[in-house]
Figure 1 (spheres, helix red, strand yellow):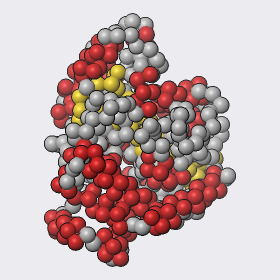
Figure 2 (tube, one colour):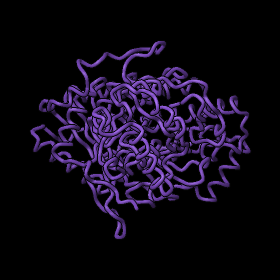
Figure 3 (cartoon, helix red, strand yellow):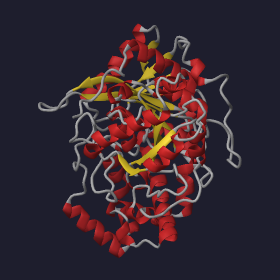
Figure 4 (cartoon, rainbow, N blue to C red):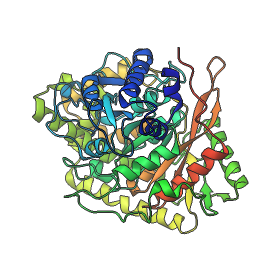
Amino acid sequence: MLDAYVEHDATGLTALIARRELSAAEVLEAALARAAKVNPGLAAICLPMEDIARARVAGPLAGPFAGVPFLLKDMAQDYAGVPSPTGSRALRHWVPDHHSEVVRRFLAAGLVVFGKTASPEFALKAETAPRVWPRPTRNPWDLSRTPGGSSGGAAAAVAAGIVPIAGASDGGGSIRIPAAYCGLFGLRPSRGRVPNGPDEAEHWEGASSQHVISRSVRDSARMLDAIAGPEQGAPFTIAPPAGSWSEAITRPPRRLRIGFSTRSPLGTAVHPQCVAATHRAAKLLADLGHHVEEAAPVIDGRELARCYVTMYFGHTAAAIAQARELTGAGDGEFELETRILGLLGRTLGAGEYVRSHARWNGFSHALADFHRRYDLYLTPTTAQPPNRIGELDTPPAQRWLAHLVLALRAGRLLMLTGMVDALVESSLSRVPFTQLSNLTGTPSMSVPIHWAAVDDIGSDLPFGVQFVAPCGDEATLLQLAAQIEQAAPWQQRRPTLK
């Protein structure tokens, strides 16, 4: 049963349960057995919910994914009565008294939640190694490397076969980056497509979207059908699609005009294998009949990155303040890097923040101008392969300096010394391509297309490519992803885990 379980995507498992070839209880036990086998080496699941799951499969289940085992992300996917640490020691004992709206929709789809996956503190990093848990989350393709972040636990769990699909969210690349690092499919929906409520109308000023990471395109399309739609009290609604996304992927896309670029928006290095992945995708697309040429939106990448980190600083400060209110947490309950980001957020004036946020509209207009000429924009998903665990840890000398800065509350001094530009480069140079979609509210996806070794002793690692579409056009992305999946299948490529 265990071997058969890992071979199926969520759609396939749903069909087996519907035909009564397997019961939901049997499928859950297979998922739990797989988790027990591989999670100790991965640390993908941070909070088990086995008793809740077993109680759920004992009753009737309905919905498009009735009986399918599922994991929530430990960030903005609250389950009533279960702790929601969001990767922070400050919130490790905080328990919400109601479900998030997206969790209600996951449950209405018939999914069986049996745990939560690890996320970095407040979803702030593109790696998943929060101090609240004893071990960092590891990439099933190479246990010495990160699965990315902030949906790193979700991606590790799906790549390892614990679940075929897992809850995820994306505020700066947090679905697409781990999908690329783990050889999976990850779609970031348009702003407003999937609700973030009821506690936040627009998470990270609307830059963050809720969805899933999956092995198959059809699972992602069916899940979007299940959870998309307006939420009462939300600030705005987005126009619904012409039909279901599940039906759309049964048709090939029209002949598309696709502009591509492999240059980092920051002017920083892009790994040769990330470039190779994009060129491979461009050739495949041309072979499939699409028009592909080198082109990019006219956008100042460094200015966009500065606007992104300004939002990042502000929301970190707000997250720390909220955690303190909820739990009375002291400074020692937050990671050092989080405290520095929070200090910078508290240093920003309200006027500075508003002016920075206003610039997002300029990026949206520049991207819209690009989309008048091209249906999609193609780039590498990331500029570098996944870093090794510990590679990005703050050096001791910098940690000492950070403690001094915090003690002196010298946030303004950091601003004046060019610290913001240094943080932009250090934090985003590995992943400079994804934030454009977040700030413009456009849908985007990472598609696994290329596997290659990056050193003499390592095994092949997956590399993804990113596609960005105009706002509201998830259908074209999913149609193209399904076409690529058929022409260059990736589901049969699995990491080898003992």
